[in-house]
Image 1: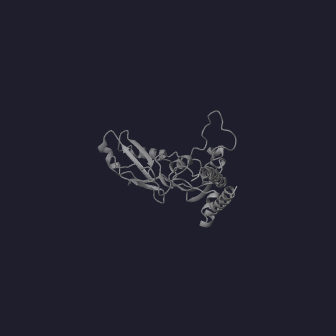
Image 2: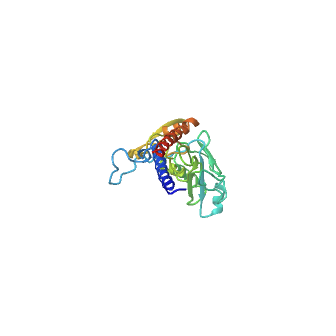
Image 3: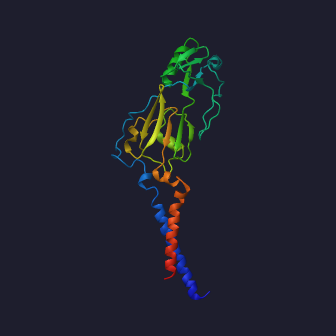
Length: 272
């Protein structure tokens, strides 16, 4: 190979690298914008002073909820007949949407549970704190200074759509937000629409639908910011996402156009 040919090869390689970089930038320019990836970037600025939380929900018990009711006393043997599961058998939820077998009280369609010795207790529409007080009152003839804990066992949220890890997640805490669950699901993908997140909720025999825009700073005031048991979150895709998977020809068309343009330009430069 002559010296002149080596120089020509180096120049053409650098030209081709620049051309491919230029073509790639053109292709990426049609993808998601920086503004579409931001959260809390629209609306009035956040207040500088702390604000009281005004929409913190009081979760109420619904049919088909599964409740854990644990009763303890100074005399463990005396408290044992009031519990349906042995000590320590009330297993915890696992992360990542899985769970171990749980033992609890299933709320029937009439909103009642049936406890050992205490009998039927109406729990429909009550909070866990209210149920705790009812159980304490019923225990007065039997136990001295009992301790009662009540919580949900099947508090689950389903997250679908443009998130990294869609699925159903079991939550131990009654206070959970849409941001908590999006974090559990690995966050929204770059192709998720952050301005129109759907929340599907069933309560008191009715189904309702709410919309959230997590780019708005007033999202914290939405009645759907705090979630309830069995809520479903759906993150819809952006239009650029649906266009990219519509069909195979549509997916490869931008690349074919870029390759054709680059090849034509490379041949033109090589003849200069």
